[in-house]
Image (cartoon, rainbow, N blue to C red; front, side, top):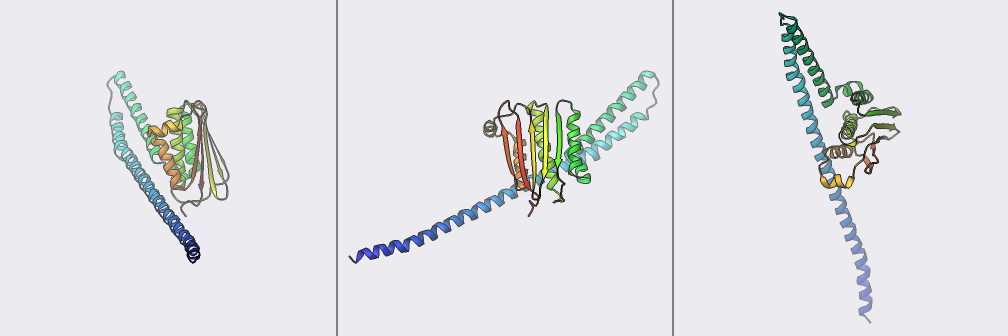
Length: 252
């Protein structure tokens, strides 16, 4: 009879002890989860920062080296004194081709580093991006913003610009879409972005298994860097819809 109370006493002492061990286990899991999440955030930040630096270097090379060299060639070609009408026509065509290459290089440089976005603001940058895609003629992009954009961290709107740019590039390459609708909404705390196309869509699981979608990975990385959420709704032959929600104070 004396052993029975001691057995119950052991159980009563064991339950709180077990609770303490479970609590410590949960704390350890939470600690490592938070640590891994912060590490992943740092890795994404490093990757994107390196990519932006490389973009700036390429844009500088296009403008400073190739652009200046072509400008010099343009002046030299224009200074040639033709001896016949045929030579005059050749010089005129060569100068026109060089001007066209210079114009294309400026467009490429602007796409790599959107200086107009940094100088004039996010909306103006998106409008220019939309206009560039609409000039291609193969796809019609529609842009609408509801609400006023607040001031934010210097790179906040650049990340959103890159996300939209990547989505448009993917749609142009793979979707066979005729229209893309970009709708943005600003409320007190969040920036809500919806991008929808009427293309052929894709199989998300197949793309994930193929592990070749660097464009999608870049989109997910930037959304993660903004501490946001992304949902992609798509099925083959039913278009694609991206829904992205990011806090306006993401850096905090």
